[in-house]
Image 1 (cartoon, rainbow, N blue to C red):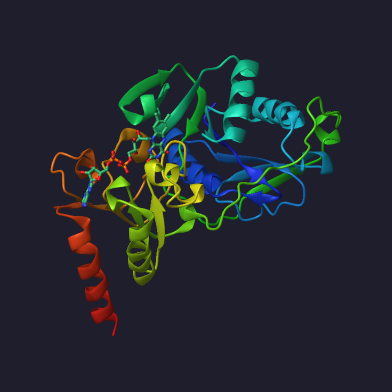
Image 2 (cartoon, protein in one colour):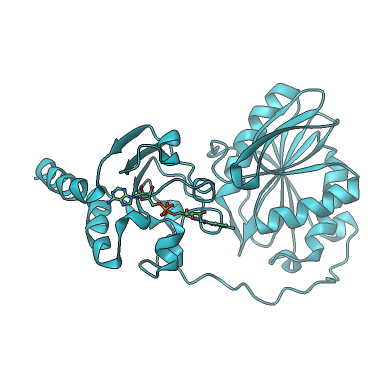
Length: 315
Ligand SMILES: Cc1cc2nc3c(=O)[nH]c(=O)nc-3n(C[C@H](O)[C@H](O)[C@H](O)COP(=O)(O)OP(=O)(O)OC[C@H]3O[C@@H](n4cnc5c(N)ncnc54)[C@H](O)[C@@H]3O)c2cc1C
């Protein structure tokens, strides 16, 4: 029981980014346990040949193309065969669904909302409770399932694993779904802010829709996109697709420029940036606690100067 397993998340035959982050961590943990990093992928026509791990169990069938109850049955079977010390899954709707079932099936604990995990005799993890207001250190006796937040671990890129491709009949499972997949309802999105390296994010301090164009121009000049806190979306100054935080998106940019954002825990839950630069008139604003650079100044004094300076440098 030394291996570290990852439940690979696949939507419409595409491996989701979170899986690469989990595999990055799995490789690190496996080197400590002396076991293997094992990916478990279930789908149809998915290219798993370069997943960054030692072994991939790939169970392929038409019936596994979309997430359904069959995935639970397949996963239970494979997990029992692999017998891992720890199972990593994304703290996503698919990950939480699968993890709960597996935990019950194997009678092992599950820890959700984790941003740290280590393995010794037992499995240790840190969970972000109450919207990140509390960091809870947990110890899971012997083994367990860890649901990790996006942006918690460094993604591994490519590997050349041993691929064990199996069909449903190979593992003695019939394709009778108790829960039938009907459709994916995709969010209407003009842009996916989670994919950008630079985000200029505006909060209530931006004051109104009429002021957002300047922030957009700044974002464009920096080669990034505009994002926001929730009040900006609630006020319909920007669409929901731009919202960062607990009820919005988790973002992992290199630079997160926070303009007039206080830094409430529900907002910061979604900010996994390498560098946060905050501009706020309130020196006690919590955003400064997570900022690499902070400036206590009116954003309306700063934005035009930044725009001019960047244009000057670019010219
Ligand atoms: C269940 C739940 C889920 C939530 N989900 C989210 C979420 O996903 N994302 C999210 O963002 N919030 C979320 N919230 C709301 C969250 O609690 C905060 O209310 C919100 O993040 C505050 O947004 P803000 O920082 O823009 O506004 P405020 O907290 O009002 O802060 C505005 C800031 O702007 C500064 N300011 C004002 N004028 C200027 C100026 N001219 N120049 C410089 N600074 C200025 C002020 O000093 C202040 O710090 C959620 C809340 C709950 C209960």
